[in-house]
Image (cartoon, rainbow, N blue to C red; front, side, top):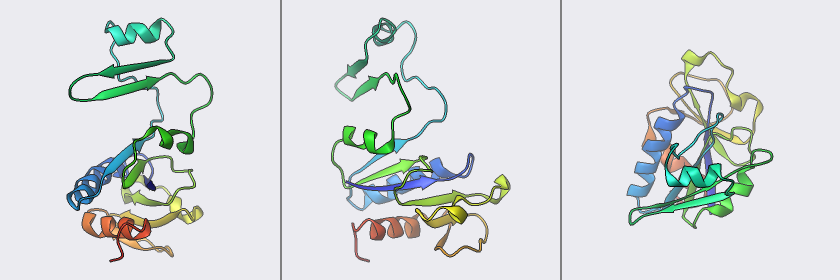
Length: 165
């Protein structure tokens, strides 16, 4: 599977860009899955539900299944899993878009908003191949308007070898 990331500081527009890219790339006939990093503890389960009770009782994995979807919850007892350890759990698709994991070694585009006042990650990270920003930036990488989803999708599909154009 081809993997390409969208990285950036908090409130840089990563999720909005991801959603637009998923829509654009799937509309072109490609299969897309996503993997999102969370910096905080999260739970997709709810206290009192049977699956929550299973985990609270000590189950290392709990799978929920219905006619519409299934989900696997896996309890982590050591260090946070690396991107390379998580990818094999996804079913094969044309492209996996990764949100976050900014320190990973996979290729990525940085979403950047000037209001954050942060130095672009790309300034010190060669795995950032381009930037999608709301302002001009002086870096030695391609720069896209943060809202130019078509051009950003074209770039990703070229970089991953899914298209030649």
